[in-house]
Amino acid sequence: MPELPEVETVTRLIRPSVAGRTITGTYVGWLRTLGGSTKPAFRRAVSGCCIATVRRRAKHILFDLERDGKAAGALAVHLRMTGRLYVERRGDTPAAHVRVALDLDDGKSLQFHDVRKFGRCVFVKDPDAFLAHLGPEPLESGFTTQVLWNALRVRRRQLKPLLLDQDFLAGLGNIYVDEALHAARLHPERRANTLRKPDAARLHTAIQRILRAAIERQGASFDTFYRTPEGQPGDYQHEFQVYSKTGQPCPRCGATIRRWVVGQRGTHACLRCQRPPRPPAG
DNA sequence: AGCTACTCCTGGTAGC
DNA sequence: TGCTACCAGGAGTAGC
Image 1 (tube, chains in turn green, orange, brown):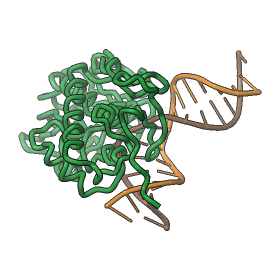
Image 2: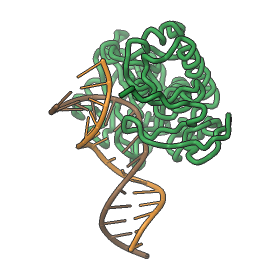
Image 3: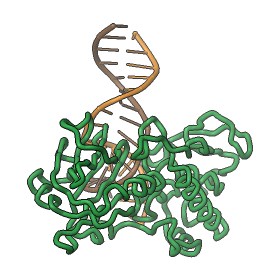
């Protein structure tokens, strides 16, 4: 499922094809993808706009729009589970599962393809306000060990749901949380405020190292869903240490990797490397 | 604050 | 072969 590295890959690969282009028309195949707007309102908002910049924030792909050289809101695309974005020559009929398509002034079309319909392609007037609830970007310079530790020590939640919470830290999903916790030797059910600073330092290092490595490999293609805009799978799935490795030996210590549910999410861990927290006394 | 449950969706798969 | 039942999962929301 697309997380920060996959979304970053899509953003980078799609940028040269759409930056500077003008949107000349819209197609909407599934209304809910617009996130509450109507087809006419969506068309009015984006048609005739120039795509000024293409950027990523958390798991959103932002297309900043301009009309007559002035800022005119943005398109915010979230791939969720099965969304894909790609540019191709405009055809007569959109392919199956294309939920939104934007005609561009060079005869091509930006297509949002999404089998499970969880994804969103939303016009927002004020992208900053739209993104304001999000936590820090894990690869930006402001995200230091100290920042992470300060945030962890005042929370009592389990690490797994906390790290999945986009308001706490932006961009991680189920795969990279499991991988980062394993690399940092932290149990997914450990309470955030029980970590000591060296624990937070290991977690900080693990998150950044894993995300950077995954971006280098153009993300992970699991379940045959995620593809780059060029149709290529990523490579990072070959680096998974615990995710989807239920029953296999831990690459670090050889103990069997377990899968269970934490906070309604399938969770993978090595219980020798990642010691369970002591249950509260009494 | 933070927990659980529920919702949205469909392709894939297990069981018969 | 073909049917039904069930599952994964990001994020938003409701209720406690």
